[in-house]
Amino acid sequence: MKDKVVLITGASSGIGRALAFAFGQEGAHIVICARKADTLQTVQAELTQAGITVLSLTADVSVEADVKHLIEQTIAQFGRLDILINNAGISMRSMLIDTDPAVIQRVMDINFMGTVYATRYALPYIEQTKGSIVGISSIAGYRGLPVRSGYSASKFAMNGFLEAVRTELLHTGVHVLTACPGFTASNIRVAALDAHGQAKGETMRDESNMMSAEECADHILRAVKSRKRELILTTQGKLTVFINKWLPALADKLVYNALAKEKDSPLKK
Image (cartoon, rainbow, N blue to C red; front, side, top):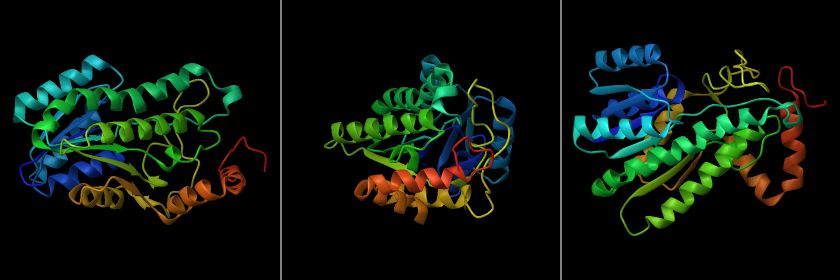
């Protein structure tokens, strides 16, 4: 990773922040972006203090012009781009019947179109370096999760998009990784949108026994180094994908029952 240029979207907290440290501590030059300038500046200061070369840029990945500018500024600063990590994402939590469709559109714009924009505009430079495109997806991209229909849809879309891109780039030397964390301790649940598009402001799950963002980032770093095509994390995550593939009706029941136990779940017990 020494002197490689790594661009990480949604890097102001959680897995994105942890990825910045993981790759930076390996000697990479890091570009971080997020919508919130204040939290982004805090992470920039922390990375700089750790001796990591970092460029921070405020950007909303759901805005195409922001993403084009982000890539242009990265190239202007470093002259190359080796690894793009599409990490920016937002969740939602409400029953479909109660949900304003605009909420699902917002989730799709960030999680899916943000990945499309960044991958499209970064691709010419990553082809030059025969680098890596990484999508931070989710187990929800393999198994639809109730009360998170929009989030699951966005991650299914990301998975299909990256699979198609990987196949297009089969003979170019470009590496494409789809990384799917299971439940990870991060602020994505706190920032999850409700039925009307407002941040819920609290987590609905006990995060004490979840994989940490730092542990998740280390797994992703190793997967990029070994140029894996797919990474499914946590025992629960691997089991969910396996059961859903081979025993889908059982998966329906197991997933329903598990998520019905969440705090304030609208699912009937």
